Image (cartoon, rainbow, N blue to C red; front, top):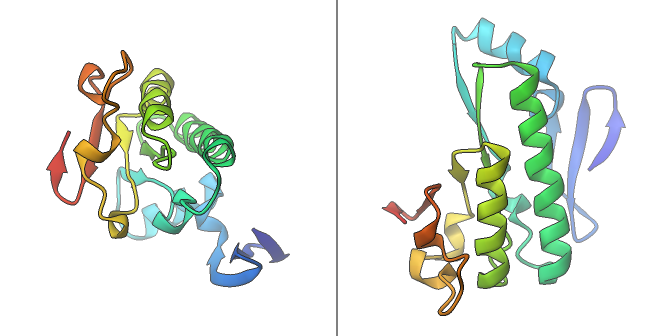
Length: 148
């Protein structure tokens, strides 16, 4: 993120400005004001699909997912009952994704929202031999309309 002026930032991908966003994307106070103006009581917050970072190495993606998930948890905690947070997992590595989904559950987030344009299915992130498999976690993951 390139915070180029107060209340605005550029989402940078590969050194290029992908999108310019306002502080309602990271400021709880701004988001609550916007919700009040639109008569919204509860809002689901999640990362932009472009932030799923599928071009990162698996280890870098895990670090980024952890950071992003922690930010979402802090935003939800700052306004109890006003936000429902969805996290992200590093789909580059099915084993790592399953472990991070378990971490997302421990954080108290009800599920994750991957980038649907990746054509990801539930089967593609279920490790073949792992005690961390998605089927063993009672957290929600939705991929292109199918529930895992």
